[in-house]
Image 1 (cartoon, helix red, strand yellow):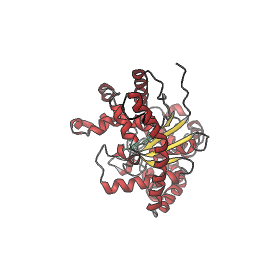
Image 2 (image 1 turned 30 degrees about the horizontal axis):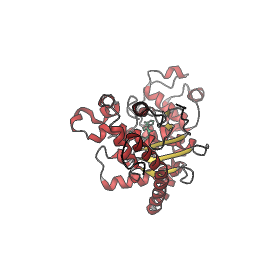
Image 3 (image 1 turned 90 degrees about the vertical axis):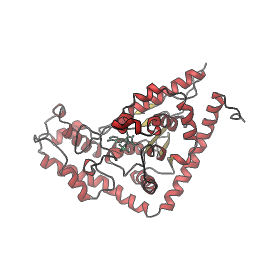
Image 4 (image 1 turned 180 degrees about the horizontal axis):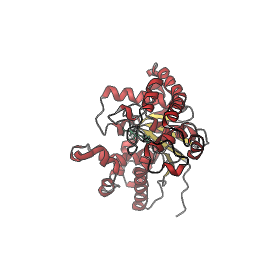
Amino acid sequence: MTEVVHTPRVFSGIQPSGGLTLGNYLGAMKRFVDMQGQGVETIYCMVDLHAITVWQDPAKLAHATRELCAGFIAAGIDPAQSILFNQSQVAEHTQMAWIFNCVARMGWMQRMTQFKDKAGKNAQNASLGLFAYPALMAADILVYHATHVPVGEDQKQHLELTRDIAIKFNNDFGTEFFPITEPVIEGAATRVMSLRDGSKKMSKSDPSDMSRLNLTDDADTIAKKIRKAKTDPEPLPLDIEGLEDRPEARNLVNIFAALNDQGVEDVMRDMGGKAFSEFKPMLADLAVAKLSPISGEMDRLMQDPAEIDRILANGADKARGIAAPILKKTYEIVGMVGAGA
Ligand code: AQP
């Protein structure tokens, strides 16, 4: 069999499960922007079907989807250069997910740490959708034959599962139809941690608003959250090695580096030895300078929700144009009558 070479294509998604956090911005969105305009097709999705794996108030879900779209555009995603849409408008995602539900094994899903974290002690009461989430995520990616997926570190396990699904499908059906997708996890902020607990990731759904910076926070709120961020009593160490075993200090330094487009070593060269009382206001100023223009632009875009809906519908049309033939071919490979017609 001749080896199939898949054209490079980037896909990634974010759940409209609440406001955007600094973790989503630095771990995902900022890197989505970097990948745009590099001569590779970029597809970015508001994954509303993933969001409903845990309860979402319908009105809030619609608002969060539009706000997320505004966030993408405010952060620098250009709907003329990237395909920008919400998942539920392209039915091919769920159709492909069913095929993958039948390829993935129960044991694979049971190993997923995100399910264990989100379901908590009450796994029997979690939705079936939360359990099957990684198969839908594999469908999101593979229904576009995406070869590269920029994500934060927390999504690594799900991407490995996507690769396992592609490999098993290809083996089962004797084909090389699906690419073996590469995760793109790089930079200082692939894992932004909670401001209240350096061992937990910063998350939209953390019950404490003080644990995260939201892209919609105003300057005073950002300064207050950073001032109150948990730290230890020691000043910053003199070098990067000194950050080991100091998760809160390491997190703030990582955030500074990522916001300032610097390496962690460079930040330590400039900031090593400073007390937190000196470093935190500098971090707050930097965060305000970088995030305020984004939140201002989000506000402006949210004044015209009809325009956002037009952008999403237009993006969905373009997305369907890629996904429909890939789904059709998948059905044909699986043996569904009528798929080849
Ligand atoms: N703390 C983080 N550090 C780095 N990257 C992060 N991402 C999320 N949190 C961090 C990245 O953001 C992208 C979108 O994530 P998502 O919204 O699909 O779901 P998530 O990873 O579960 O994010 P949240 O904020 O924790 O949402 P909830 O609370 O609803 O579960 C992904 O690329 C992710 O890596």
